[in-house]
Length: 297
Image (tube, rainbow, N blue to C red; front, top):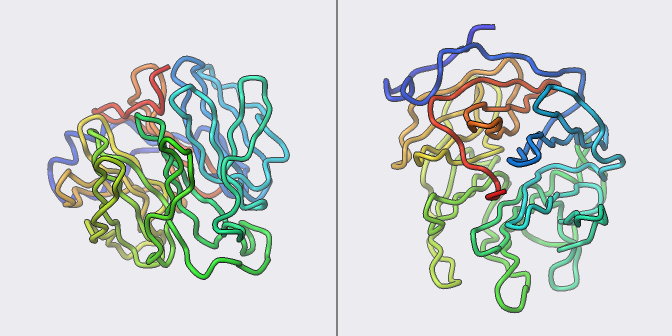
């Protein structure tokens, strides 16, 4: 299929290729959490409702990676190449060790269960940031159960004590998050409020949190997965597909998707293939500017 873009600024065409949007695999229930392994040359992604994580090789072979996945959502790698996963059904953030063992990194805050960790990112110094909305306690993408925390927070895990700390609790639906190229800013979107906020990071202190941009459009979709490419352009799921912002928060346009886009990542050897999880289908298209690998490996 021909790639369909809504151009709001001609600079979009310097970022997005005119090569077609292609269907890679379909027949899933609710795709999320794609992450590319640069040296393993494979893509891991979640099917939340099916409770399964899949692996797509560079050759295009599809296999089951983890089942059950406890309704896994967002995934990323830490600086050592270990897979971190947000689990809806267990309200845990977990890490898979090299021997395949899965260990819990976070499951409670001040003695109460986390809501349902949703998405996760790792800074260069190893600090982990993740969002914790309530979606994993709601059908169909979670297990219905009462919440224990009175807020929907954004957390940091790391530092000398490796302690879990709350950095914001004034979100309605904290979801996708990503770090700036220099690691000094953290962007977090709010699905319910349809906007993106920016925090400043310095010497272990988090400040700011003002609204940075809004995802505007009449099509179905809301802020969800979010990442920054190697030139500093921010991509964020939103109405109609994947919205592309410049480094000042101006929306340059939208990569339209046939189904509601939930998350995406760059992959392949040149990091210019954008894999998009949208509803029941994994799509990909090409970009002119590469993305960034989740870790240096």
